Length: 516
Image 1: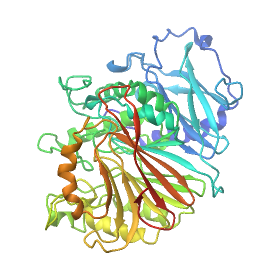
Image 2 (image 1 turned 180 degrees about the vertical axis):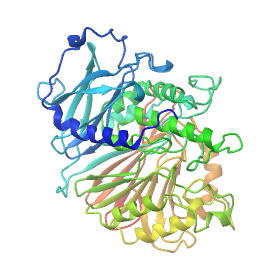
Image 3 (image 1 turned 60 degrees about the vertical axis):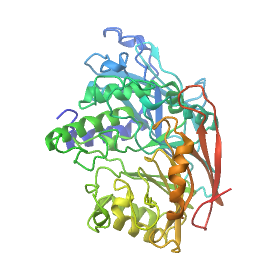
Image 4 (image 1 turned 90 degrees about the vertical axis):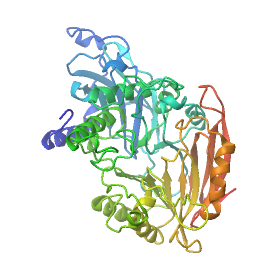
């Protein structure tokens, strides 16, 4: 299948990436003319920009992908291309700290993932790439605080759901000005939907992506958004995927429409989608896909202030329930046994003040039925209630758990309850469901509130709901988390302004969230 990687090959690449940063300091910043014997590359190889991600106290991943013809497979020759990289303590590169050469390989779409090691904790760095005389834009990143640091602050931006066809990625312009330390993106980086003639911006291609080249083209189109490119170049990102990076509402190896996509056809689609995802994200070699599988759940610590547990709620889940009895079936799992054990161990043994959980889909209950009875979204955690409720029981013994979610295209900020069937049960945490960057477009606010305000009495754990486009911004300190819901005037214009619609507070040692 396209993009499959043998286990031996995967281990070799992982080991190679791990030593790359350590070896890089002995390599030189070579001029692009040193390989004049090679056929010159086309102009514009850095059309997709640069990015960084998954910061550690001594390391960060630097990313780019060579693509002079980005919407047509990339446009690169079918050969390995050496790419020089440099990271420095200043924007003019007068204080370089690491330099090296990475290999952009055709089998990975000429993407480059440099795991730079030996950096200093809690430092801002600048980086760039060069190949064949062409220089990338300069990127800016920062490392995580040292493990021993108990104080300080951390600014996190939460984003999700950016549909090219629904509008411009305007909220990133405001996010850039807020200067977060890290951007957490919890899914739906691209949408696999077919082009629409009535869209604000039309998807490339002629239909949904199924092949590796088609997914590469879709990612390349999204990467061309200038606001998204600028935000990638100015802060490290921590990413995970939801469903639209592959196929709407898929579960494990089960597509949305199994009557139309056979198992073999869908695993081939998964293989292509996961490889394209890896090729376009600033993640470590541990995420190199193994056929239709990819390792995405992982953990990052920011000193003793915050631990970030990044979940994968797609690959290991049982197929979605279709009714209320199924949603309460104790045999259904969202995380799978291995990931669940990993999460619980990381929460129980966490050394940090705050324990953040990045969940692609909403964890708190959404009762859609006004009055008596219940009606749930089965694709969210409401469809996997036994596992969700057991997790709420664990939260009761965890220090300051806060869930950061996406998917819903709405802002939905809630208390997390020990038992959602009992509104008087203990509050065990807080959840921020971030709205979309552009998905859903500009929504009719009056119509939204007419529909959703009536559901508030049936969901007393909801603290704030809204339907504007935007993102959430968190200032995390030892005593509490100050959160802002930042929304754009419109996503029908790339130049619209944004502002803080609401401010909320989570106090350390006091589970739950309140409006300020």
